Length: 112
Image (tube, rainbow, N blue to C red; front, side):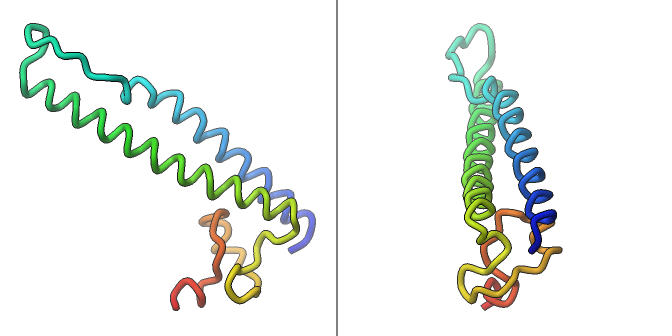
């Protein structure tokens, strides 16, 4: 992988990290504590609110996992190891990296 490709992936990863931060900011309201006011909302509405809260928390957890994977990918870019399989050391196909820049394994090792 040449310097131009690494720079392009760095920019793409950085942009996705910024998107994740924006999504987190928008999702904070959905994770807020559901208040118990039986007169304001009925029991089913409260259950819906609790379910929405749980879904917002699960989405936040998935974004955290993606954020960690992308930050690790940036570290690999800095170390010159980005784009190489952590198992066999071969280059990861550029198309695979385009789909998921946080991937650490080539298709052969991932399938095995």
